[in-house]
Length: 78
Image (tube, rainbow, N blue to C red):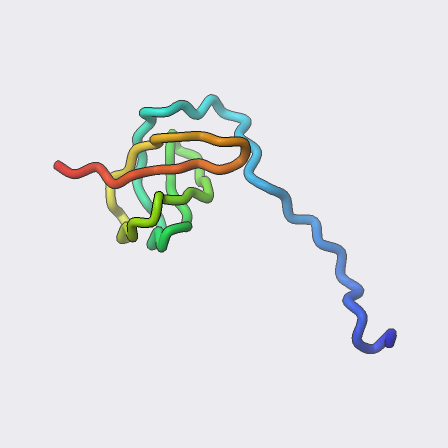
């Protein structure tokens, strides 16, 4: 069984929001949000989620909700 066991230690962590991030903050999607992906908000990179909509990269977004460690965003339509 030792040959099949995972010997690496997982050191990743959940989003920790050290900078004050508030509902209404604006940013831009870095990757495609389908419905989760990366976004740059207040010059910081976050993993964000939409409420089911797909958002293309380099699209303006706005924070609509923050629940525990999840950040929900929506596309800003001009």
